Structures are given as structure tokens and as C-alpha cells.
Length: 305
Image (cartoon, rainbow, N blue to C red; front, side, top):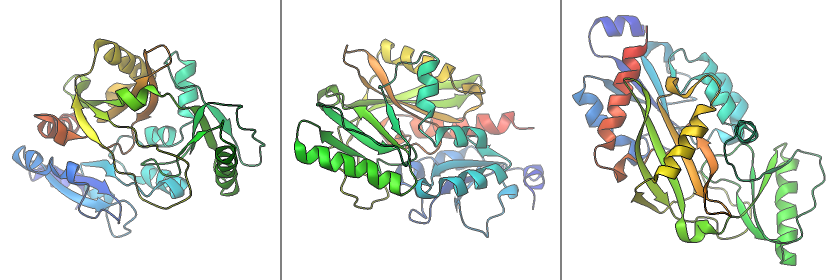
């Protein structure tokens, strides 16, 4: 049955996309199921690489927790391009799943953490000192991410091995200074959801520091995060709006966005990541947020032809 036929019968049909390791969704996303049902939306959970799913049968396909894509990014983007009603759109997925988008945002004037990029086959000498973070340009859930004190000879060796390990796997490494304000202030994630007039701020949370040391190659789908509610400052909101204004194609076509900020060396907010593909939205940490997510889906459905 096509989405068009389904819509004629009344209730719009929406897929919430996950991965095989989370077949029932992340618990936070499940909080939106009842509000969606209350708004007359039939929500179904679907695994992105399940070949039996007919994606054309949905009025909207919403990316939520397909967190195993990082090592299959090309396959994931190719799949996204086949889904006719994807949120966020496939071109956004292609752009946002490679963290080199940070260089574009920086060039557009958004304050970002300084980043060095090391392609496979390139030589890399660790900076002389200071703490640095190394991670792949394509990753999800803090996979393959480590923190290194480059004044420590052992850490220098481990950092070099980390970059080399990524390169050997054909992956681009990104190297950033570790901004130690995150140890006290944490990371602030600002969540934006679609409304009748485009993307609107919903809520903010604080993420505690997760990177305690080098990455030693252990496999995990994602790292556990310590989350608390937080009130966003006017300065943080202004930076987030500046970041979103630089999104190719415009931010108002997005269903959701998460802007992750930490205090820079001068104390002003800088962008760590802009999450437009499959971010945790932390709706369980803000009153009314599950309902706002459901309203965002309804608003997005209303815009579709």
C-alpha cells in the first residue's frame, strides 16, 4: 500500500528508524510513541537495513537510532537516497555524516573547535604538548574516540597508533585540542524541533565529560552519557542560531537538530558537533519535549505534498 493510499484512509503512517541492535528503539525515543498516537499518527519501528521494509509505504521516515552506520557510511547514505520521505533529508545525511562539515561551518563564521584532519596515508606528528581528542571523521556515539595528554610519552605513542589505526582502516582522523572547561561546565546540547514556522528551540541538556583517556580499540555501539537538564543561555542560543543558519539548503526543512557546544578558551561557546542525522534528542529530560517531538512530526507531515 502506498503512503498516498494510507493517507486517504486517515491516519498518516510514520517509520521511526533504528538499527538491528536496538530493535525497540532507544528508550528516550519511545517516549514519543504515545504522543504520536494521541495525534492520530501511526508510528512503526523499522530497522534501516531490513530488506523487507517498503519505505515507500510511509508518509514520513524519521531517523532515530541507526547507530551502527559509522562503519557502513556509504551504504547508509546510499540507502537514505532511496527513501522518498526521509527526515532529515538524504542530502543532509550525506553532508552531516562526515565531520568535515565542521570546516564548512567554520568558514561560514561559526565558532568551532580548531581541527586538524589526517587522511589515510598522511604522516602525522603529535603536537608537542597539551591534551587532544582524536576521532574519526565518520563516527557515531563517541566510537573510536580518545583523549590524550601529549606531554606523556606513552600517550604520544597511543595517539599515533590511534591515527594510524584509523588510517589503516581507510578512515580520516580528526585531531582537536581538548578544551578542559568541559570537565567543569560539561557540554551543552541545544535541541531544536520543527514547528509550524520552521525549526524552533525546544530544550537543552548538559552532558558530562565522557573522554577519560586513550581509545584502545574496544568495540561498543555507543558510550553511556551522563545527562542533566540545563537552561540555555542567550549566548549559547545565539551561537546555535548562527550554526543553523549556515546549514546547506537551510535549517527550516529539518525535523530536528542538535547543536553541541562547550566553552572555548575565552569562555565563549564553540561548536563541538552539529547533529542532524541520528542525534539523541533527550526528550525525557524536559517537560513537554516528547509532545513537542510528536508535534514536529505532525508539522512535517503537514508540509509534505
